Length: 90
Image (cartoon, rainbow, N blue to C red):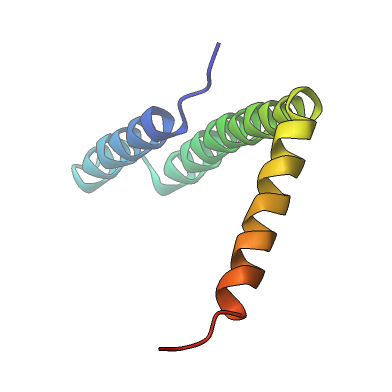
């Protein structure tokens, strides 16, 4: 399953807004707000780590399966850049 960091961040902000509204209405004490914020931050951190791990493993897989293509493309870019630098200016 692909982690969705954008959705997790939106959910985090929605929960924070609800928590702030409850605190402003005097429904929950400040200590409970602090505890809940720490819990929400931990949840978002876990989702962030899962997303970065997914992207890192995807990048590693791309490098191992498409190594020759990536090297060929890099060589083509370097040769093209060198050719453009050595062209006379008209």
